[in-house]
Amino acid sequence: MQNAEVAQQQGQSDLAAQIREQVRQQVQEAQQSAREAQRAAQEATREAMQQPGQPVVLVPPTPPPPPMDTIPPQVFDIVIFFFITMAVIIIGLPIARALGRRLDRKPYKQALDPGVTAQLQRIENTVDSMSIEIERISEAQRYMARLQTERAEPASLPRSDAR
Image 1 (tube, rainbow, N blue to C red):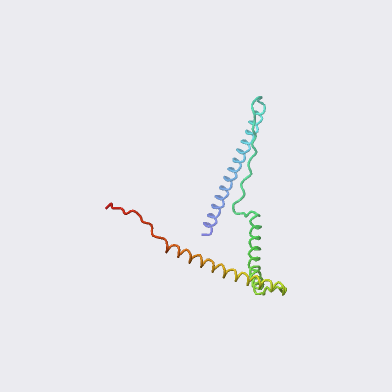
Image 2 (cartoon, one colour):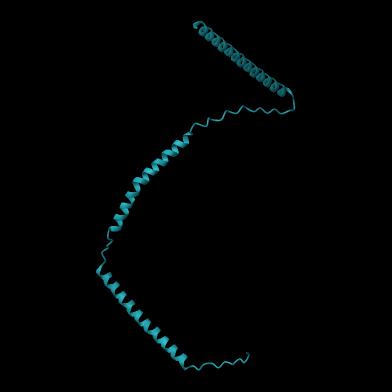
C-alpha cells in the first residue's frame, strides 16, 4: 500500500510540475507578445514621424486609477475638524448659557441725579394733565356732533313707487 501511495504522490508531483511548466510557457508567450506589440508601436511611431505633412499626436499612457479601498487624506482633516467643532459646542454651549443667565440676573441700576429725577417727575405730571385735557376736548366734540345730528331734519327722499 505504501508503494501505491508513493506512486500516487509522485504522479501528483509530476502533474503539478507539468502545470507549472505550462503556466511558465504561457507567461513567457504573453511577455513575448507584449514585447512584440511594444516594438510594433515604436515602429508605427517612427514611421508616422517620418512622413512629412501629417501631424502626429502622441498620447502618454494614463496612470491607473487609485484603488477604491484607500481613503483620501482630506477626509481625515474633515473628520478632525468635525470632532473639534463638536467638542467646542459641547463645552462652549453650557458656558455661554451660564454667562447669559448671569448677565440676566444682574440688576441694571444706574444712579440718577436727583435733579434729573425731579425733571422726569414734572414731565410725567405734565403728560398726564395733557392727556386728561385732550380726553375732555374729544368728549366735548362728540357731544356737539351728537347734538347737531339730532337737530338736523331728516332729508326727504323721493319715494319710489316701482313695485
